[in-house]
Length: 289
Image (cartoon, rainbow, N blue to C red; front, side, top):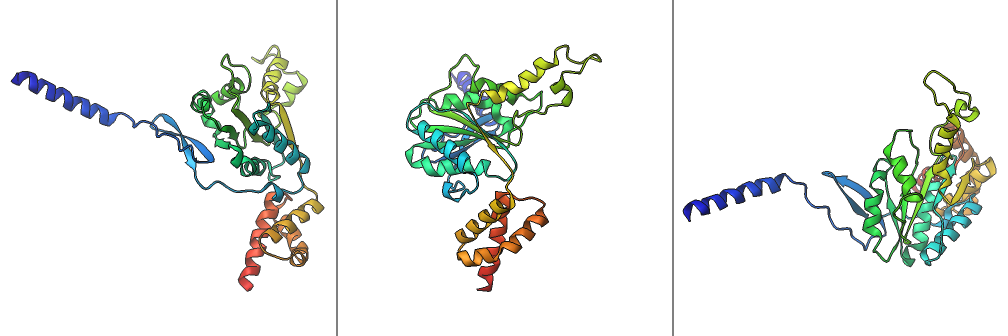
């Protein structure tokens, strides 16, 4: 019995050392949160709760009324349990694509909407995320921000399958909202567009390669396009944010010249630049008071 006891003790010591080298189990999601990030640690993926998400009101997004109305209606259908579409938001930078998705969360979180931000490199984990949230009663939007792919990236195929094409159906409580500066999410060359690339190891049927690239964006049921702001729209947004930050309308209108100088210095006019100007200008005014 003494030898057997020693053998058991040694075996337990070996097992203890082995357990110490194994990665810890993934933490259970905090389902009380309204927003999450998909993270990987020690080879395991898990939902990290975002307890203080960026709060944006839809009313504060100016100059994109049509896009706002269509996304709001699609999200309203989704949280009500009705059919709705995956959404691709494309266009000029700084025009409110990401803010619109965050604003939808702010508007519909009380109705059960939840947002999961997934990095492009983690899209291969989409089947794992789907399995995790499928039995939940909440309505989840997977949010992919600033999305674009190179031809060899594995996340491209994973996203295509999640949108439409896998043998496993997408659960009713899941939609995908993605933003991108590219309509088709992948780089395209003029040679592909004209189907003139021949020989030298090139594609025999380059048009089929182009169709493959276009097919991903076509799997989004709703496309929302965003365009650069003209001067009047830019100044309108500056005026709005200055009032949000505490200035009177008269003070906001008096800042028009400085707002234009700010945009010239940045080399562009967009909602993001208008918001940055308003923070700077309103902060200086507050300091003077």
